[in-house]
Image (cartoon, rainbow, N blue to C red):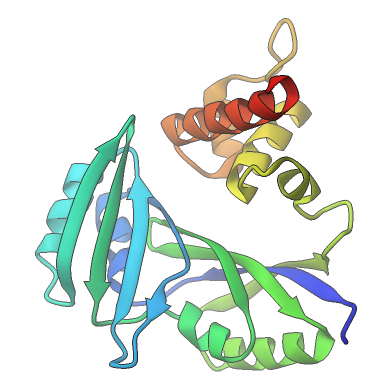
Length: 213
């Protein structure tokens, strides 16, 4: 048994997958679940956006590589499901052993967060990344270190919600008077203000339900 598991973050530029191109064209930020690659090499996509969702939907609907696009609204976000005939770079990293957990597309740039089991697998993933256009390793650290999603695992919030809560605390958003505005925290996280506030509310609701439930 391999005891070591590493958390890794990649940034990807220059990928011509439909989601990356659509966010580049619309300026929309998209949060996605890891895509499911079918045996026919088509990918099943599930993702959401808050601001610019209508424009994003129009661009994707006009893309010949996207089929069966479906959108549904919940609160301030629009959730999408579709089939893509052009898989993203994340599949090549997955084939090498990368286990994606969160994906974000913003203005054409993709950010992947996930895990690999052991340094040997990490070397294989890095080798695969080196053969793929515009893939850069941003961070790597042991799962279970102070930098990982320990709060997320303990309290059952998502990594994105944990990041919103942690960054809010670090920047003094909860202080009286506030040390940072919602827009400033959102900028630090690289997301829109509405996306930050939704993650914060959902994370707080999950925490409070467990503390007071």
